[in-house]
Image 1 (spheres, helix red, strand yellow):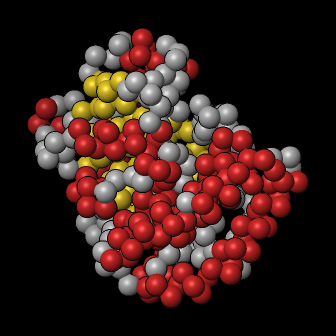
Image 2 (tube, rainbow, N blue to C red; image 1 turned 135 degrees about the vertical axis):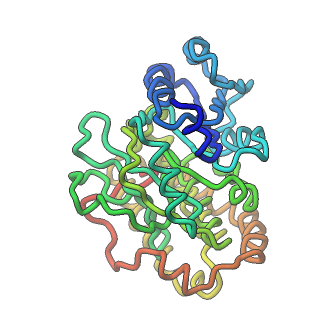
Length: 336
C-alpha cells in the first residue's frame, strides 16, 4: 500500500487471543496481513498453547507475541494486550483466531469510525465459514430479561441485513473499539474467563455513554467456538450461563434491575430446564450454582459500575430487545 494513503488512517492495534488454535492461525494471520489498510501492530496473546500455535506464528515476524505460562482466558488475555498498547494507538480491533477477515475488513471499520463520529464501537458482519451465505451474527442483542444472542444467527445473508444500524454490542470475534473507551471502563472482567464477556463489556460501555454500530461491509468468516468444543459443549454452556447472570447483576441499571428481575429468573429457569432435557444438566446446574455464589462479588462490582453510569435509563431501555418471546429462528445464544 502507498505509504501516504496508509498514513491517512488512524492507528489500530489488532489483538488476537489464542489457545490451541493451530488449525486456524495461518489462515487468520494471512488474511489479516492482506488488508487494504494495514494495522499499526498485531499483538497475539498465546494462552500456553500445547499445540504448534507458536511455531506457526513464527512464520509471521510482524506479529508481536506475548506468550503466557498458563491459560488466562479470553477476557484477561485481551486485557494483557490492551495494556501493552501505547497512547499512539487510537483503536483496538479484536479478532478471534477462528475468524478469517475479508480484505476490506479493517478499512470498512475505520471508514465507519470516520463517518459516524458519535459511535465508538463497531461490529463486523460474521458469516458462517462453511457457508458464507448464512450469517453467524450481525451484532449482539441484549434482552430485557437478560438473555443475549447473535442477531441473525443461522439466517440467510439477505439485503435486510446490509444496512448499518445501532446494535447493543458487537461480537468480539471481530470488532473495533476506541482504546480510550476500553481503558475508561477497565477492559474485560477477567472473572468471566470467556463467553458473554464481550456483552458484559458492551453493557458497561453503554452505561458509560458509548454506542455501537454494526458495519455490514466489514466481513469476517467465523467458525465459532473453534477451540472450545463448539457452542453447545459443556465448557461453553457452563461459562455462558454463569456469565449471563453476572452480566445482569452487574449492569442492569436502577429500577430496571428490579422491574425485570422476575423475568430474568423465569428465563433462567426455562433455559435451565431446556438444557437439562438435552442431557447437559450437570453443566448448567454447576453454572447457575456458581453464578449464585458469585453474586456478592458481582454486587460489589455493580456499585462501582452504576456509580459511574452516565447513560440514562431511557437510553438503556431503548437499546435492549423488548420482545416478550425473544427466541426464534436466528437465535444464537452466546454460550448456549
